[in-house]
Image (cartoon, rainbow, N blue to C red; front, top):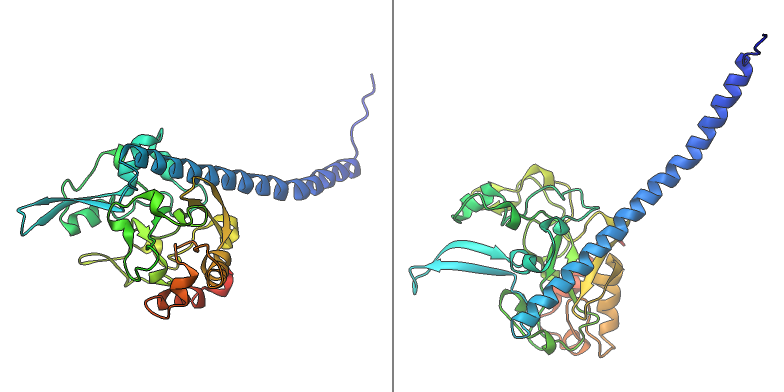
Length: 286
């Protein structure tokens, strides 16, 4: 029986077709993977927001404070440990893996409350904490301030969530590269360098160098997933978060992402940092 084999030209044609199809499909697969991560990240933020709301329901309507300290020797108190808001709301989610931002390049790096080196430098005990309360960098509490109280950032103490005038526009959780428990516009945009402070006697770990404090890695670094006090979560660009809302709030009764009202912005006192947060927004993120 005679068997006709493929000629060299036929084989080359087939290989060329496969290569063309691969070149077309691989970017599509990459985009689909990135979109899946973005959806997972938004879902994470939504569930973290709901965990905050459930905590509030059990705490007489009070939001989980950014940090809670264990003190001894009071009234001249000594801090022996510090717990972040993540630890407080963790019982309301299925797993702490939910606090790993799927698109954040620092998602495997422990935050300052979970890093043994930082805990030892601050004098917190124990130095190594259990896995079920160990959290990564990625999601931070939005440090807001109540209208009419410039400089009074409320998240370091308990406050009633129903006291917010515009819960649908006020952020509660956002994606960042910060190792800390919270972030706020008072910091302004900053690109981390090797000499930045991390803990007493310790500079910022090299994994953070080159990252921007107020951004994550979602949506090609043009936007982030943010969660709001009314329970919803959505994608928001950094320009909209730091500039558009700030400018619109000046002529609106609705507060911006940081809970700042137009009346406050137009009062001329105590809100210069808000404008700085917009003016320092890097062009790459706008």
